[in-house]
Image (tube, rainbow, N blue to C red):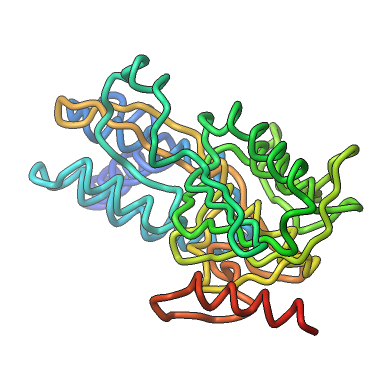
Length: 321
């Protein structure tokens, strides 16, 4: 017969072990029973990150889990903890500019259809330099892209070099970017690799290539102006030029972030939010760390005010050589 005191200790130990096991080995079940809807929403985002985000090592994932656990515990124990801030803090642990949360608003389809003047590419020829400014690789570029390429081809005899300004370009559609870049290359360029999770949750690596345009080639000297606002698909545009040395990049290092994020809509504190979670990590050719850490460095650093004037002089000096 077990003494009463010992029996009480054993029962207490079993009870505590069962509750801990239920809580931490079955988080979905535990939190779904919770009355705190914010807690359930935050858990949903946490699970989505673990499902799609390509942690490169077990240590990287373990650190994320450990720090995330602190935020989740705080949300669970403190009713005053803000769910939106908790998601923001968890996403910040990824150290990826693509990861973020913002309030969701119903898309204005008519507004989306209208062309945004500030996003329209501009191009002209000045003193035998083809000047091109591309503020965005967005869907609005589609029909305009043909005009730009046509202008470059029709006026080949009127310019000796090319100056492309993408300093304000925060990305968009990488296909548009590569379609345009293709007219400046003769051969396929391997410019990096992408790591992502496959359906079985294993890491899969794919080689990133730029294919040249099959009918158009413009082989004139190129300078591309870059800044810390260059981001996402715009960095994928720059990568082939950088690794092949097809163009000279002038300005400051890019922002660092090409991750093809997925979006989740969740309800927190009665409001709808859209949460973006990166799904791949891009590595520039020759680099061991993802672009979030390495960024794309300029070939010529320039922090002055007249970067266009500096670039024009750089091209003119190159022509004289």
